[in-house]
Length: 342
Figure 1 (cartoon, rainbow, N blue to C red):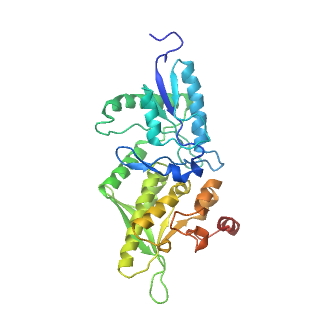
Figure 2: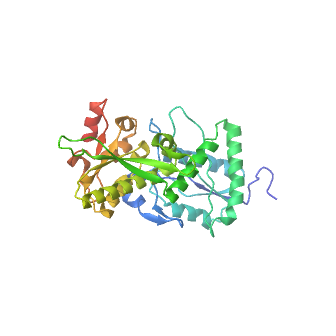
Figure 3: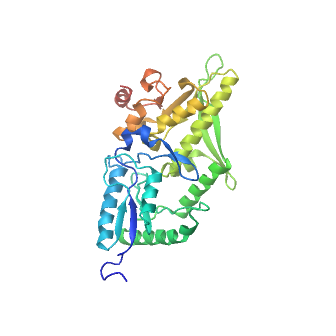
């Protein structure tokens, strides 16, 4: 029986503060693919941050350190997946292995997520079923998730952002990826005097089996606040480059445009994603235009604009060497655009 006042004595808890502070400057390292059993994913990512510049990695590390002190005071042995906030990694597979090697009774990963400026709340995400791997932990993980959710709400008064409607939408979208329900539509951006098109814009639509055709305005805002945004961007880029390759085979040199979100700009793997897509489909840099609304860029922190203005992937010319690869939409701030193009 645990000694009085130390109810967690004998318990091992793994705390994962998520993305490290040096990740944003180590794209080649954190974009190395690793096998997570169900798929291959990038080793790690950079995380997000507030408009005021408070980064996710600093927030998560701060929370983890505070939580570790509280748990140790209750008698628990705490194992951390990283012990500083200025390194690179470890990869998601390595973070999981740290907890497994410690034979942790529980593992908690701490992250921050995007949301509207006036919004607040929290998410608790539980592991899903991976046959042969997670079968035995689903029930206790669900109990732990409910306990954390209820305790956090009781103490802080913050709402659980995982409303049934939001969870249903994200779950449906994840299944939509797997079932091929998302489709890319290409619309002309304008017509030249000779009747040719001035390029095509790639717009994603979701053909939901129960709700019919869902327009981007209904699912993109929720997706931008979730882990699915990277998957959606990867799908749209691949589908757009596939279509551009078909046009080339038909003798049509049509440029296709893809819109990027604020969350995409915080992903240092974006250039590699674009480079891989161009190589896979035999494309040229001029086949693709990446569009960013200036409102999105103007509200983003320095390393987000560095992602937009920085070097492109191997085989893709530097973005300032040709018509801007990131073309802001009709502008309100020429000063900001001048800074971005330098």
